[in-house]
Image 1 (cartoon, helix red, strand yellow):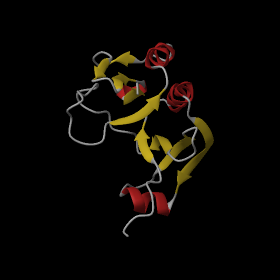
Image 2: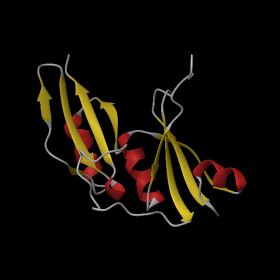
Image 3: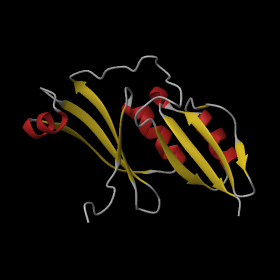
Length: 146
C-alpha cells in the first residue's frame, strides 16, 4: 500500500477569519490555529521565508480535515481571473454531504457565498450545487435523496 489515508485538503485564503467562519457555518469544527515558519516550512513549500497562519477544521464525523492557510510571507498570489470558472485546471473545490441543501445555501449566503450555477437534481438520488465562498473557494454541496 502506498498511502494510509487522506490526511487533509489545504486551501490558501486571504482572510483566515472569514474563511474559518464560513466553514464553521457549514458545520466543520475548528481543531486549532497556529503559525508555521522556519526551515521545514521553507523546505516543504519550496519557498523562502515562509510564515503562514493556519487553521485546521474537521468534519463532524472526524474523518476529514480542511487546512486553511493565510501566507504572511511570502505574500499569497491571487489567481487570474479572480473568480476562476469551475473548469479551471487544478484543485479548486471541495465537496460536502449535507442534509438540507437549501438551508445550507441560505446560511452560507450570510457569509458572502453565491451559487455558481443553480441547485440541480440528479435523477432521484441527489440534489447538488456549487457555491463560491471566501476568496473564490468553490464548495460543492450534495444532498442525498434516497
